[in-house]
Image (cartoon, rainbow, N blue to C red; front, side, top):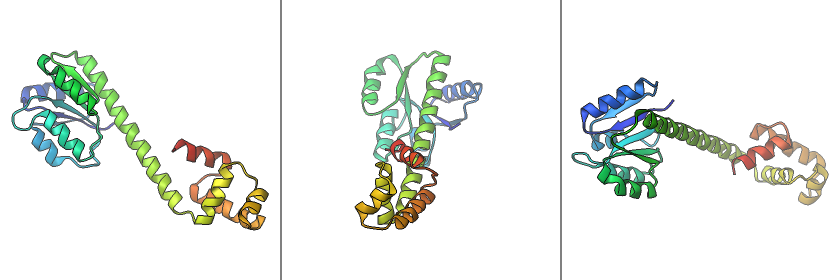
Length: 198
């Protein structure tokens, strides 16, 4: 499981939240300020951000805006006081995942965070799969790509040979190379791979 990053300048709240999530086997990292989290954030930082809106120095909203400008897509859940609800709703429109009003229900908060962590993990897995597919597609020659497109369109080898003006044997060789490079055994698998990533 990826990590929950708790950013709150109140040490007592950070400790209480840390204990709550650790008791539910959620890995936690605590940050005393928006600045310390921002300094350590990297594009591959995985998990979920539980972020207090009002803090000394940089506010939670400012941190959120800075992270967005850096391309961060980690799910963010804001902790808000009652008067901050309109601000939190504005953050949702910018892409925050959720907000939780204080005082909050422990179980509800943990459930929302676990959902956000699962979402982040799925998103990263999907992106890794797409990057892997793009890398495999990049290994194909132009002719192999043409053959692949016709195979996926359901054309038989003889039809592909006629359309491309090459011999059936050459089509079979290209088809074999495509299957090998794309790591599939059948045209059905190849179609699923390409349409699943679309």
